[in-house]
Image (cartoon, rainbow, N blue to C red; front, side, top):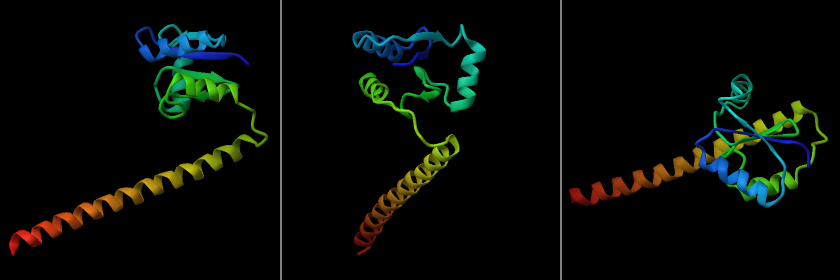
Length: 131
């Protein structure tokens, strides 16, 4: 496995858990505490748009909790199965944007369906109470 950098802070329990999971799996990593690496951490935050720890850097890719992984085991599996993409960066970004647009559209459609169901129930109950 290539070099893994974990950006953490001193009080993050999730960071401690990820480091413990890595040690259990004998995965080597370098920890960088944000307050000790201020300018580098700020660059990571500016790039990802997410000031969330533990952020993992691996093969010039960033993995952010919640966005890319839910727990340590999921992260470990992702890293173990990681392969470099044969596609150019712009093509990967474009495909990810299309996926993001699709997911946003699906979320709005689902929200609209739920709101329509609620509105129907409210209107049905109001109609019953006026009779």
